[in-house]
Structure formats: structure tokens, C-alpha cells
Image (cartoon, rainbow, N blue to C red; front, side, top):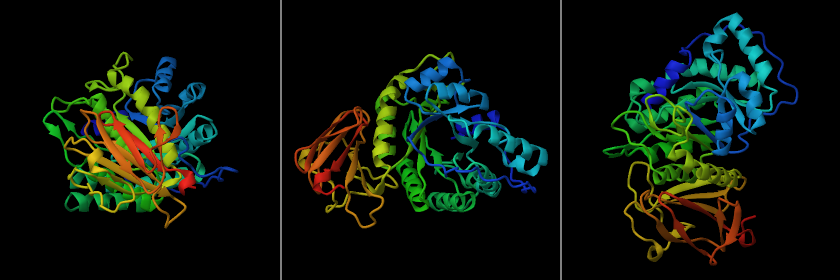
Length: 421
């Protein structure tokens, strides 16, 4: 968190709360449709300067939303990538200065029709005091370009009251922080970061944060994105292993995330990351070449569904809910090899059926050091999803015998012929 905030502070102009000046309204673009997430997002925080080699590396690694300047959009289009536009004009301060407001509107006019334009980067980890000004900027962008999202990343649960701008214990302060963000800023997507891997062990609020953001995004009817750890920025922090990275990606998917982001791609003073300063891919990049397409495949399947609950068979950290004995999907105790951390089950049903029965489950091995096996019992004939090929195959009736790599997951559904229409 601190490292991400530092990078944002040194890379982009400081954003402060401002009073909205009178700005001539622009005509809403003819035929423009409200922003939709489209292909689930795979992106990063802090990256290298864009060029042909970098764009090719990112495309090959399964990234699909790229930090960019206006001038980079043509290159991104060439590689089939979507751009998140960065510009100092994308600040609430621009609305307080008529000349800057005109320049901002001119920027929007220039980029909004570009096929590679996907979103606008606004800021990282604002406190609640900044929300009114950010809300005005988001509304301004939405009026002039409803088809492209204004992206803002939030603090994690372990931010203190002063950083959040709210009061109370961890849950109270963070719940109020999320509420104010949704009520005042009215975002199209909820994004936050949470880094848990230290050399002395894992911190214990990862699932609490996931669950609070999941519920907030569901209540607002917008998707959410999780920025996960891919580097160490100080001696006390450890670089995630392949199993730990897989665990972060699959747990995010099981909670219903429609976006994943990695801190960092490349940054000075960081160990690990996706690529070294000279552009050489790291071992994490090699892992992500497989994981990123898997995340997209699973998240795409989950887009027409709604998360109805996330349950843990063994973990008892804050935010972990035990799996009920009468759950529609449950684990056969005789088929699970014990590992202490147990499994996670994300349960989903069709979003357009408010009383429908659960139809899908994403099951994750929470042990990121060893393989695991489990027999998942469902409410009907089951099918197992292959996230590599994007195809479903028949399980053994209403039992799916699953094998997981360290930190890995599997998605299972009730076969359409058995009621999953």
C-alpha cells in the first residue's frame, strides 16, 4: 500500500479537493453507450515506458488493459490491447480552472473515439475527503464520454483512520469508506489493493477485504478489481512464489472479481515484479502467461452470474465464513486431503434469477505450497471447466473429483441438461 501510494504521488500530480467551476456542458456523444467491462481486466500498477517490445511482451503475457499516454493508443490497437489513459489533466483541479477544463475536454474529444481507449486513470488511494471533488470529475467524464470508465483505486482494510478519512475499528471505518466512495463518487468499478505476504508470515485481513469489496460492488451493481502483490518493496516483504500468485488470482476469481492487477510490473527499488528494469521477464511473468488467460476465461463465464456466497472449509481469519452442512455444493470429507488451510468455495447463480438455485462453484486450494484433492458434491449432474481450453467436460454424475496445484482452483457447474439453463 505505501509503495503504491508513493509511486502514484511521484508519478502524477497531487489531487486536492476543489470547487467545480462553471464549465460549458458538452453534448453527450451520439450513440455512446455506458461503459461495460467487456473482457475481464488483466492489468498492473507501475510499468515501463510503452514501446513496441513492451506492448508485445504485455500482450504475450495475457495483459489486456495497459497504462498509456494518448500517443500510445495506436500502438496498443496494433497489438489488440486496451488503454488506460494517463494525463495530468485528469484531475479535479482541471475543473477549477477554465483553461485547464477546456484542455481536459479537448483530450476527451481526441481519445474517446479511439478503438484502443478503455478507461481514464484518475488517482490511487484517495481518502474520503477527496471524494466530493473526485465525484465531480467522474460525473464530468461520464457526461462527455459515458463509454469509458474513470478508474480510481482505493485503500485496503489495513489503512488507518487518517488515511481513510473515516473513524472506528477496521470494519466500521472501512465500511464507511466504501459507502462514501459509492455514494459520492458513483464509480463504474471498485478497485482496491491488498498485500499480505511478509517474511514473518501472512497478514490476516486478505479475505475480510475481499468480502467487503465483493458485497459493496454487488450492492451497487458494478464489477470489482483486486490489485495483488507481485513484488517486494522493502526487506520485510517477500516476493510471491508461483503457488502464492496462483492463490491470489484464484481466490479473487472465487469472490467474483472481474479484474486482476499486479503490483508491480516494473519499478525501481522493487524485487520481483513482472519484468526487470531492462525489460527482462521475471519468473512471475512466466507464471502469469498461464494464469492471466485462465483468470479471463473463468471471469468471463461468471459474468452473467451473481455471487451468492463464499465459504471456507478450514480457514478462520476475519471474513471467512464456514461452509454450511446443507450447502448446495459441499465437499465430501473422505475425498479431501488435509492441508490445514482447507478449501474455499465461491458459489454463483444466474444474475437474472433472484430466487434461482446455485449453479456454479469455484473451488480453490488455499494451501499455496502443496497440491490438494477434493470431491465436490453438487445439486445435480456436474461439469468441470478447463480454463486452458475454455471447454466444459462431464464429471462423475453429481460428484466432481478435483485435483489442484498449489493455490490453484477449478470451476464446476450443474450441467444445462440438469437445470442450468
